[in-house]
Each structure stands twice: as C-alpha cells, then as structure tokens.
Length: 431
Image (cartoon, rainbow, N blue to C red):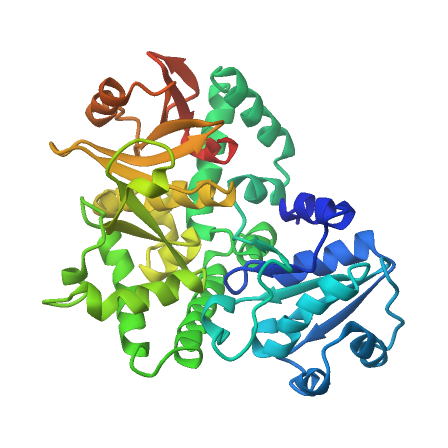
C-alpha cells in the first residue's frame, strides 16, 4: 500500500545534509513496513535489528557505541555485509536500547556515509533523558501517522477518483454528483476503518467489519498495555481515566476538554501528566485555543483551553463501540457524537499534512473549529458534519480579522463564493 512517507524518505536518502533518521509514531501506524519497503526498493540490502524481539542486541551497545566498533558486529549479527551508502541499517523499537539511540550521534559525527534509521513507538515516554544523552541536533526526525483519506482511497484502487478530487479542489469546481456520492461513501467507510494499515488491508481484502473491529480492539489493548509498561505507577490509572474519557468529551456540544468530566472535582494538577503521556506516545493530540489571530499563533495560545483528539478514527469508533452501519448511514443516535467525530477526522488529516492546528472563540460564543497557517496566511476552517452550512461564527471571524479567504468543510460539493472555499469532507487531505 502506498504511503506518502516514501517521498520524504527518498528525499532524505538523497540529501547531502542527511543525518541518521528517527522515525517515531504511535504503535501500528506502519513504520516498520514502510521502512523495510523503502529499503528493499532503494538499497542493495537492509540490515534490520529489532530490540524487542532480540533483547540480547542491547549487549552489543554496552561496551562501545562508535560506528567503527559496531559495524563489524552488526554485519555479523545480520549475516550480511553492511556497505556505506548501499545498506539501510534499521534499529526497530529503539526506545528499548537507549545506548543505540545515543550511537546515532556518533554515526552523524564520524560515519555519516552509513544510512541509519531508528524506529520508535514511545520515544517520548520510554526514554529517560536524565540518564543518557539524546542525540539532539545529530539526527533528522519525522513523525509517522495512520493513513489519511488519500492513502485509504489509493489502497482501495481509487487512483482516478483521487486525481479528480485534487483537480476539483484546485479549480473550485464541483465534482460530478455520482463521483461526489461515491467519495462521500468512501469517507464514511474511512471513519469506521480508520487509517491503521492492518485494518485498511483487511477492509480491502474482506470488507469484514467484525474482523476489523477485532484488530482495532487488539491495538487498543496494546495501548493500554503500554500505559502500564512505560508509565509511573501512580500515573497508570489516571492515564487510563483520561484516555477513556476522551470519547465522552467529544460527545459534548462544546468539545473543549474539561477535567471535571474525568471525575468529580478533577483538576489540571491531577491529570496534566497523564495527558502529556498520551500526547508524547502519539495516541492523542492537543489543539489549543488562540486568544488573538496574529503570527505566530503559538504565542497567543491559551494553555488552559484545549481540545483533545485521538490519532485514528477507526480506533475512536472502536473505543466508543459504534456499530459500523450506524456510522456508514450516520444514524440519528449518533447526533451528539457526530460533531466531535468530524472535528477529530479533520484534525487527523491536517496533522498528517504537517499543520499545527488551533481553534478560536469570541467572547460571544462564536467558535471557529480550526485556524491554520497556509501559504503564509492565517486561514479559518469551519467544520460541519452535514450540509447545514449556516456559519454565523465564520461570519463573525471574517468581519473581525478579514482573512485572505476562509474554508468551510461539510458534505457539500466544491465551490467558492463570498470569499469562502467550500470543501467536501472527503477532500480535507488536499488542504
């Protein structure tokens, strides 16, 4: 299955400024598969080392972590010669061997001609930075996410439809209605399946939602296991409480995160470490409110006002135990949850495209779901779960800040009028 990360990896390989690469991201997003596929296609051979399946590997890094010492030993372990520039060296689950992570510094300084990639699922939470030296400035870093809507459609063989969507996005011309309806169905299927590669492959091959849900439940169980394995004993229960509560918060009309909804009398001091753990592990992301629309937006965020979204829509549906047909047909029973689910979907697509997202509220309850910086402009995005696109909040924002244009995301077809670019939900990946 095609992954957009390939374009980044090809550019990394060819860059004269290339450093060892750390590819991080939540479990099961496809890091190992993508790197091995990249290695098979662009290198003569791959030397793959997994610190989880082969714990004895750690011993190799205990005495000496200079490349001159390591390369002959690693070649012997891999059973193949590691050749400069022709072999891709892969350290998987590198968070389990902190010395291996430190060795990247020396590969950068003394042996940059070797191509090294380190993969880690929980680098932000499993690595003790007080005990060892993190190779700051000596590595390239990239975060990998679940498959977005474009990758999902390409996996299903909808290349021509993707090309048509991109064309309509660029020209602001409506899609033919039959294609629009087909793309909307694919969008609803994506909500149920999500972007975990194993789930997408199962959907492609079987269309069996029971099998897919079983896989999603297994992934969720592995996340809970990680919360116990890589967490302070006092924080395990709090982290699980927060994670379980996110779907509840997304069901509220105001999706701003509220500590009191986790437990009666809940306070920031009690749960902020748990939220930080979930963010660092890549399982969730925070979107802060901005108090002023000025560059850089980061300077104007309100650290006490934020929303939390999960990293994958399929896992969100599984966690909420939503029936596939209820999502595919947007059952009325989901009305309370629709808004939060669609906001979460949009945030996932924007995050994959490397946007830092924020939201905005006026003093009189006008709210803009997302504000992003696009092509140097601060652009507001209003998200609607249906085609009811009356947008009082967007009107207030535009009168106040006079953006170059605004984006409205809903079930409506492409268009552009009154300085508002209308984008159907399935096309958010184009932004």
